[in-house]
Length: 96
Image 1 (cartoon, one colour):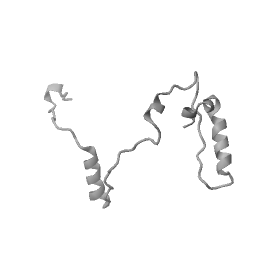
Image 2 (tube, rainbow, N blue to C red):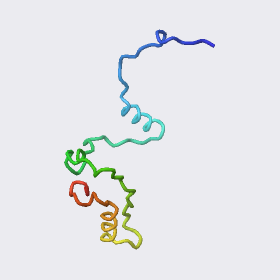
Image 3 (cartoon, rainbow, N blue to C red):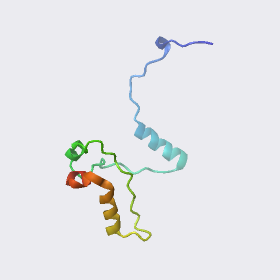
Image 4 (cartoon, helix red, strand yellow):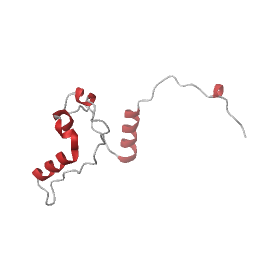
């Protein structure tokens, strides 16, 4: 069994542009043309909200997603969401 020492492994100086590589594979393999990303994702709330601490020993609930289908109204869904929040419901920032 031949062992390769770290000194024998060639070092590559350039970084791989993975976005371009993935787009190339999508075009070549699947004939797809990915959309150009013009705007980066931005949260719909201020970034300071992410810094607000949760209540002591708070466990994030497993929220039910609203699909708009079925017998659950939007009002009922929001009411359930607020109940699931528990003690976090008291702060506007945490409800977001």
